[in-house]
Image 1 (spheres, rainbow, N blue to C red):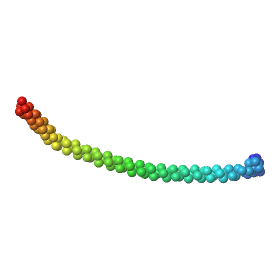
Image 2 (cartoon, helix red, strand yellow):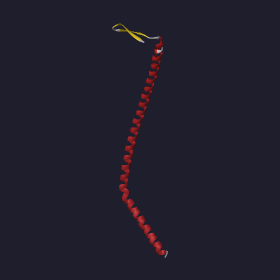
Image 3 (tube, rainbow, N blue to C red):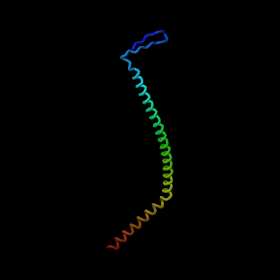
Length: 109
């Protein structure tokens, strides 16, 4: 390939027969660039879809966290309000068991 200037604004290009397949190579490169562009566009579309799904998942997780926090608060309030009743029931059960074992040991002698 040789360059020859005809005038200052023009370049004349002469291709040797050895390099005659340059047009075919350029066409092949254009095809590959087109394929790469299509792949990049598909990747971009998939990334948008996945980002949308992640945003929806994040919103769902935030709602679930708020729901769980609210229910834990309710459970804590319920435990505090009825907690003293549970302690009384456990103490009464323990006393009844103690007296049953005590009387059974007296009777079995």
